[in-house]
Image (spheres, rainbow, N blue to C red):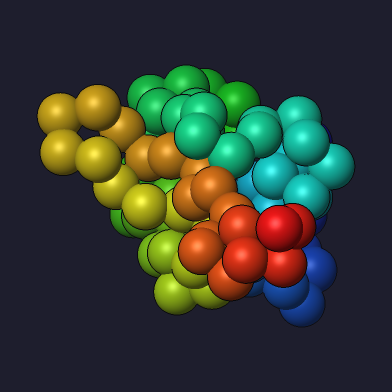
Length: 86
């Protein structure tokens, strides 16, 4: 993905949208780690602060959570999803 630095959507939003679509389509499934900050710096070519903002958007949406010492992981289905399947 190439960041459009001249467009109206801030880079952190573009990155959050890209990661969200990868989560939604199963490319990064629940319980799996999203790319590290170092990996994303190389992939997107942006500063770490921009990446932190993008990850915070996903955290605010409840899509990812930080596991101390391990990284940032996609959140699995909540208990309400389990209740509906039984």
